[in-house]
Image 1: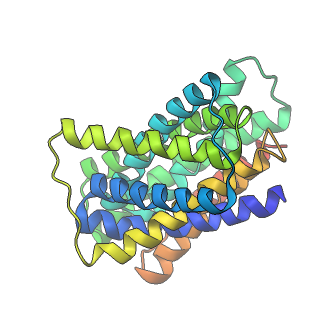
Image 2 (image 1 turned 180 degrees about the horizontal axis):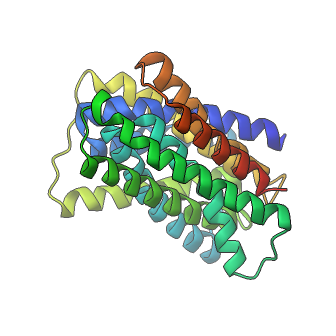
Length: 284
């Protein structure tokens, strides 16, 4: 069941993030995230109405949900900004390295990694370096300069780190609450967070007719992916599903290659392969 939930999560995140590229270009990355969370909140409330029982919040679960919601909000904000800037086939694989940061955090908290995990760490770092180096090839094809490429790479790593810490807190929250209740609180705090950010930055809330169907499916897919991920914690607290779900980067890259014809160099392909090989190794 854990593997199945991980695969469903990867597919949902992968397609949802690819759609985020188009909605971000249409209404801006902040509005894209805001409306995605609005759709997700409504979707979760409908699910809870039909399948949920009563809400049973507790201080530990709520505090972990709050931290998870805010961190994931910023992680997604950086991801959407990166996807808006491009290249998709650079941003998605870097963001998908978040299990690597989970590994590092657990190490600093006292876990004892195996030799395989240390080797896998070096493999992930090597893959990320190759992906970053290959980004220079997009200067001509996407008309990006070095500064824009560096900004895109930096934002992607920031997104990966934020999402990793957010996932750790979401796992802690799911230890004391039902998975559906957990994701409702997390998404609620994420929505409140982006709303406050829009208010303080005096950003105008925009929604166009063209963006509505994109944001609808984007919201359903992103929230479904996250629900599958949190649900997997009930079967596996370490959660192999987290690693499998990081395959969303491969899904997004394939869609970018097939639909928007984004070119992928040999160095980039090797980097992507090493990154996901290392991520898998971190769970052994």
